Structure formats: structure tokens, C-alpha cells
Image (cartoon, rainbow, N blue to C red):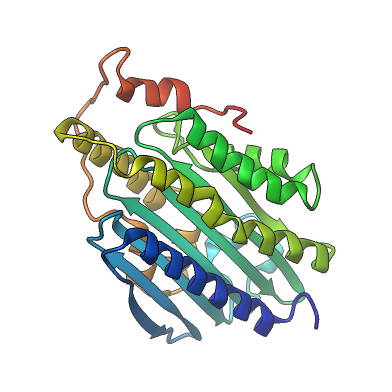
Length: 296
């Protein structure tokens, strides 16, 4: 079977979604996922699953989609103008998890495949967005991803880590969205080799994240921590609506709005000219965690 057989890629992603949802629901222990099957008028569809008001997760969304169309939207051709006007096929799994406890970090993951005309590429990654920074959490997340990358080529992790640091930067704030992870796009060449890497790093998501949730989910917190969580979620919203290419692609390609915007938190806040108290854990987040750093 060809590494680029779309049916086998789709099957892998559907199984990935199943495994992730099963383990997240088990970890939450209270809530379960609601599933929506949807079709896109221009072609294709998807399977969206959302868990709400759980014990561990205030909101968790895990989406599979496979869509096709007659031409790529502007967000996909800005860096590849030669593909303008080409028909396309795009499939992937994406998730964003918004925990209830402010000490448990937000996490995002997305793995996707695109083909347009005779051109194809793999993309994806995962990144961690803590509200309160813990060095051991950032190290665990990065080391798990690095281990998966290193199984294929030791050059992958440093390249993808730097790519992630640059991509997930809120440029109008002058800070990273979180502590990063890995990010890559437009990977093409040896299809077998790239697909093996893509599947391996996708399957490393659960072991990279679930141990962190177990360390932090029962830490006590109060109104101060909750308010800071809402402020940091506001930063997350800013990035997703201003910079995120996946959000832009989904909206420009006529995707299902509810599925595209499932990444947004149930509650967020903005406070004019908020400044953290010097030396506080809130101030330390930006000074010690939201700039590029070697975590692995």
C-alpha cells in the first residue's frame, strides 16, 4: 500500500481520534464526548467530538475532517502561489483541551495531510500552553516529542522546535503563546519516511500530556488563579483568531464553523493594561516561560 494512499491515511486519523477520545474521557472520569457528523457542501465532511463541563476538562474538542474542493483558499497559497486554482484534498485531526484547574496547561495538537494537483505534503505538531509554568512539565512534554522525532532523524526535533517557537508567537504581544513543542508544514520527499515520522509524533501526544494532567489536576486554587487563567485564555483566543493558519483555512474554505472554532475556550477575559505583580507566579510565566528555551 502506498504511503500516500488517502484511505489508509484517513483510517489512521480516525483511529487516532478514537484512541485520544477514549483516553481523555477516561482521564476526565465524569463527562463524555458528544459526536457530530457533518458534511461540507463543497465536498467532504468530518467527525467532531466535544466534551464539556467535565472534572478535568472544562472543554475538550477533538476533530477529524476530510475536505476537498476545486481550488485552495488564499491562506493555503500565500506561500505557494503556484498552487493557486488547484483542486485539493485535505484531511487531519486537530484538538484543543481547556482544563478546569489553572495549574493544568492548555494543549493543542494537529496532524494533517494535503494534496493539490500533483503536489502533496504532511504537516502537524503539538504545543503546550501553561497558565502557571512548571519546568518539569515543559521538559516532559518536549522530551517526549524529541524522543519520537529522534527515532527518525536527530535533526528533526531542533528544526521543528524552532519552527514551533516562531509560529506560535503572539506578535502584537511580543510573547510566545506557551512553551512550544514541535511544528512542521510542507514536508514532502520520501513519502514512507515522512509518513512514519508523522504517525509516530501523532501517537506521542497522549504520553506527552496525560502525565502532566495527573500531576496538576488536584492542586488547590482560588479566584486569583482562576482570573489569571481567563486572562491567559484571552491570549489564546487572540492567537487563534489573528494568526492561526488552520483557522483561516477552515473559514476560507467554507468549513463547518462550529468545528473550526471548537478551539476557543468556554470562558475567557481581557483586562485593560494588566500587569502582574513583580516576582509573582503570574509575572514569572512571561519572563521565564514565554520566550524560546531549550526544554529537552
